[in-house]
Length: 519
Image (cartoon, rainbow, N blue to C red; front, side, top):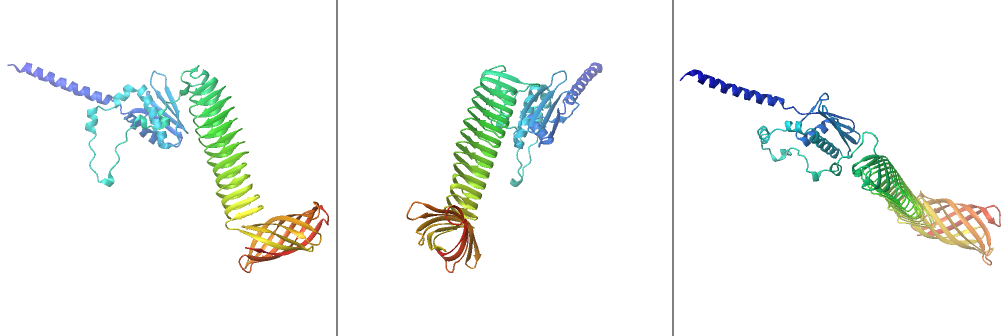
């Protein structure tokens, strides 16, 4: 047998093996190192590295930052808005945008989800080349070595299933126009644009019922306007206006306005103004308003309710809040803790640091003043001015005193709360057959060693005991000093100068008084 044919066959086999190896090497070199991308996040709290890692975990392929690549994924984040664009040679760029949640982790998931969907739609062939075969993945990933229990590491991050994604990420990205997006709706979904609930519009006009995704501009409807996400601008209706996202601007409804997100601006409803979210600005209605937290003004004629108020809450009916830092007004004003002022016919609070002004004021701990006809509190660190003042740390005393130079014998009560007193009584003038009633209030001070000092204003009216006739009405300035030798018994002496309002006698006259209080 000749060796020449054998040699030729061996040479052919070796040549085939070499060509096969060369082709495999060429294929291995042809596989790209990663998906070209450009990431900018200068106008947000997110960093480019965190965005890159989130997108890589979503796509299961590496990213290569290459601004010069003809086919690339561009991610731009500014504030709370993300724009994702895919550019390919010979094709028009494809862009999508989405508003980001305030939570950092949810914002990264939203960006990764948006970028992943766009890349899968526009670069499926390139992603297929970048994804390693199953056998290669098995050989390249050795099993992790065992580790002690305290050192156990979490398993590699995997994308969450669709049902576990945050609400903002579950929603499809809003459709946007590169120029001005306008629409007119007869009755949703009968509209000039299809799927208006997925559009970010600059102008929307509804002839009856409109439903849009978001508004950046003006949206108006004759009967009912519904916005599923955010509004930047104006959302108004002659009937009902509902916004289920944040509002930056004005939301108004002739019948009512309602929402679930944060309001930065004005919300007005003729009958109702309802928001399950915070209000930074003004919320008003001709009937009732309600909100979560208010930083600004909330008001309505009948009912106003909120959780925390920093600013003012007012109504001609019932005003209810948890904590108020500012002013609360209402016929009935109810709140838990107050730092500021509360006024109404009836005011009710738990802890007050400031002023309660009403006909009836009821509180638990008051650091400030209660002013009204009836003031009630468990403790007062400040004072109370009213006809009846009752405090757990105060004193309510019967009192009797003599006024001269006329022989006038008086009897009544004195209430001491904090640094204030109220004294009221009625008496008889034996020399002139007159009777007098008076009420006064002012400053009460403990001077130490059992001594007490008081100074204040009083109103007094003298009438004839024989005929129903006013003799004199006057305003008086009083000052007196008391001494408490034993607990509950306080003799006192002092005097006053009165100014005649109407009736007989001199315009100004002086009096002296002495008496005793008990308890």
